[in-house]
Length: 217
Length: 200
Image (cartoon, rainbow over all chains, first blue to last red; front, side, top):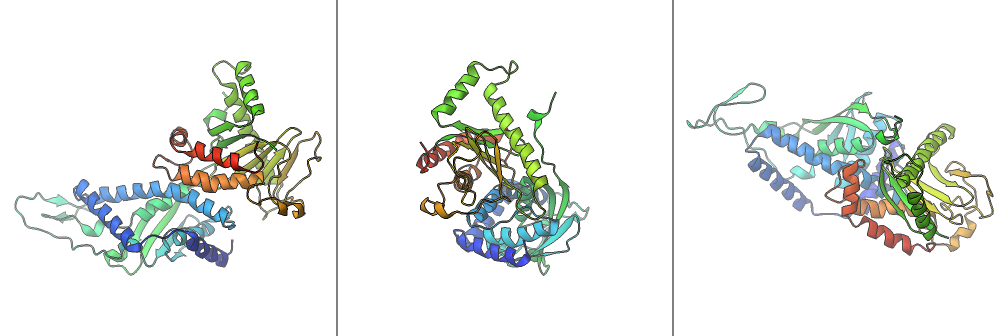
């Protein structure tokens, strides 16, 4: 598929999807994060993992939904010939049709690509608090994962990957079409960078074969 | 015009869903069960379904090799003297196979007369389209064709019932078979198939 037809398909599919209220969506996600913080007792690493897992669960469903919707609307996505093509489909059709977001693909190599996300609907009302170094006597000293001492209270908010759900979604969706990838949020507007960047690395293309039942003894 | 049965396989060949509709198919299944000559411990009906998967799998490889570089390489239907199998495969590895009688055309652009292919099996793949959809305008375009019905089943019934179910865990595995049983997939599928204009 050519780049312009991919973009056009993204717009067509977006117009066919039922819409939800952006604020409701953002606030619901925010309350999910707050609940996670309560449940995991401010353990940021664990929360990032849980968000990724939630995203994975969403991603395995998104792929079939995308394939079905495009089939119904006469858009032929077809098997992608290379990683750049896959990246374009994820950015221009996937993100566009489910979230209405504009995304760009960059830094395409043989085994990885980067996605730049501009307006992120999840974080429209969000501001991460400053990491506090409290001086309460009864709190134990805690160490961050990079060994820096964080004496006293709060969690290290700069480690929170607020929109880590996206990484899980990409991983889950690509897993269903035989691509094993790892995604990471490298730059985040909430942490002070200028743009959101997700780096996707292709680990393996899984082979499409018949399963255990078909192997001869 | 009769629908005999439908089978759904995952990308590893596991039988996710299978149902026989016509009396002929149900009788054949019962006959297989009673006089099964398979090895002890395996179910002859399952063995037969696995053979179907094996055939679809091998034919897909074959069609992929025969099709020119940039055309669509999909297997659409296989026709023998007594029945036609319409197939549809998604990019996510899900395979649908619908057995019908010979007078159901597979999709809008490959209508064939019932007199064709007397006793040789006939394959249709999308790169060899027979022209003339002229007479098909009288038929309802989405319901009169086998493969289009499968596309509809995937997009509207599978995605709506199974993919959106909270029990869904990706498109292969035993957990998926349980998940399908817990949704209203079978009921929706039954009502869709009985509403097709060519169902009996």
